[in-house]
Length: 360
Ligand SMILES: *Cc1c(COP(=O)(O)O)cnc(C)c1O
Image (cartoon, rainbow, N blue to C red; front, side, top):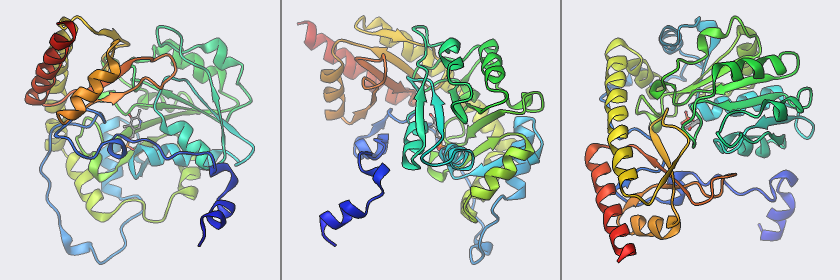
């Protein structure tokens, strides 16, 4: 097939789209991966191969029940999917008409809402966060009736800020007759305020997105959850693939959500929260950073005039962090995921060397 034929066959709305620059696509080498907000800790799981000859359950009951119990909701309010990313995609595909409807996002925020929408030819409206990274509810209000799904990330990636409960309530009210409000709680385990899962009965247009990729240390299995009213879940089930979850994924997820699995996760979260505090103090003591946002997640957002030189220097030493400077309002900003104590110390040592050379 010639390049020009491929070009002419390609769906129109994809022509100008670039694939998402995931942390793993940008850099595949390196030793200290502090660029994708993954957990630096690995759990232990066992695998039973007896059922691998069979197609897996679309929605494995034990996983649904375990997550429902963990989140304090009913199993009918839970959908399990190939990561929270698939939950985002399903909300867009199941509730928006291609070429016609739009979603609303509040940048700077997680990139996949816009990318997912664009790949399905769904419009993306924007109500940027205010200077303190709170929601701009006046700006959001202008989109009532014009969008079908509103994505609010809390704690927000990459600002680490949690949206005030009154603001979420106001957003739910603004869109109560016209849109779903999806609160992305990928980092909820690290945050101080509890999330919105238990408010589902009170707000019929509320959706909560969760994942095993961050606090549970299971980014590699691709397993996420959408929590919503049973009616919303039923619509999402129309759009989901027949076998979204491989059998080994379901087995590992069930183990992660068992009582010992939850204890392991909570232990790692408190370790990471205290490592984060130490790393934050050490980074700010270097004197060349301004911290932005808050730390309600497993990463820190910093601004430095030496952004590019520092990135290049760290990459050369196999230490990978994430450049956020293309995001709205985040010029010269870097996001650093919390690693193990050793990784954090290598990072600090590398930065100390870098800034010492700069100021000589
Ligand atoms: C990492 C992340 C996700 C993706 O979760 P997966 O379950 O790995 O797909 C979703 N939302 C936010 C805000 C994230 O940072």
